[in-house]
Length: 280
Image (cartoon, rainbow, N blue to C red; front, side, top):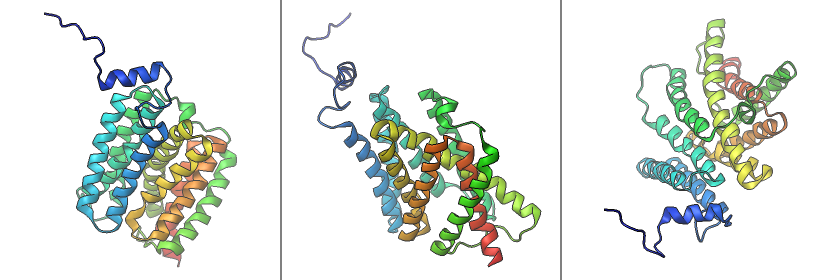
């Protein structure tokens, strides 16, 4: 038996559809789109601050709640710029939860980066497919790379030297042999550099620019980039990494080149965790 929908009846999903079709300012009645995305950001930041303060259980719990909330919310308001921003933000709780829950498969610390960042490629790929993001939007091209490589080295050395004074990082490789340098280069460029820049610049910064404009999108993505490095346990590293995020983000805005910022980011880590401490 079919039941007719009562006239004047209301449900949450219909309100979202109505908001989209009538171009209402917000996809959620009573909240502007800016507030919706800002609340999601604040939940991630609060979770990171709890971890930073040593309250690991509360931090992990909030990250789990945030991940669930972002996933459900992006489904309810699917098809809007807010949903696209919320979907890319889900990658940050996943990154942190992978970081904290990954079993130790190897005694070599450098190998842990592979186990953490390789799995993150899967949800990032699913977000890209779901949102039908083009290679051009992601910045996947190799135009002018001959000119960009020297720039990447210069930026990488400068940022690495500054970050070394901030956290005094130890070496992740035993020596400066070709084998050791090759290993750290592969891991830091193709895993850490590529995945972090794909997430923070190609996805988060791009979607935030769509929601807030280029300038605010750059600032907010860089803020999250800094906060997500709270695991080093120093407020100076959060600020410095946020500043580095501004540089990477600005480079991405000007060149739209994911390979450039991936290389620059990877070189920062190669110098920071390999060359500089071993030469000191």
